[in-house]
Length: 225
Ligand code: TYD
Image (tube, rainbow, N blue to C red):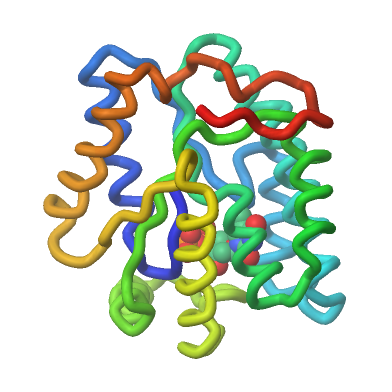
């Protein structure tokens, strides 16, 4: 699940988990950066802003190091056990935040992806699309309830707009993997759009542990689902 600040990823993941479990699937919900002790430690370094002075390329390497541990310890074992994994942010966050708005070379990021994921790539990436002003309003409401501002949330509206454009470009360039979801409206309305997509993919046998994309053949390009 991907999207900008305040796009509703976390609440939609909860709904998706419940719905998938109701169909009898075993679901593992996880997030990036994080998911393992090592990756959570790196998360702290990144979100506190401690790595910011070292630059976006350095941050990209840290996100990827966290991803590598997360894939090995959580994602790959869960897929191997036939479980469905829902991850709050993944490779596209790095492409967008460090690539599009951090100016890190995309080829370098793709190499990092291969090293970190070793073929464990998403069958389906849902990109929650919302005007950044709307997303920031939601994020501000969340902060009013006591959530702290992290390193990336403090970024300007202009940067958030650039990120939205980058996500939309990823959706256009990867139509077999990515689906853009209109994230405006009520939580229930957004989930209806998500479930329409997921249900269709389930019927086609494309998502949920079929395993076609998860081999270790790091040098091979990801197969279309
Ligand atoms: P989080 O609190 O999980 O944000 P959100 O609720 O918006 O998902 O913080 C993760 C932050 O890290 C978020 O601002 C996006 C950023 N990020 C990157 O810059 N690159 C990455 O590869 C990942 C996974 C996250």
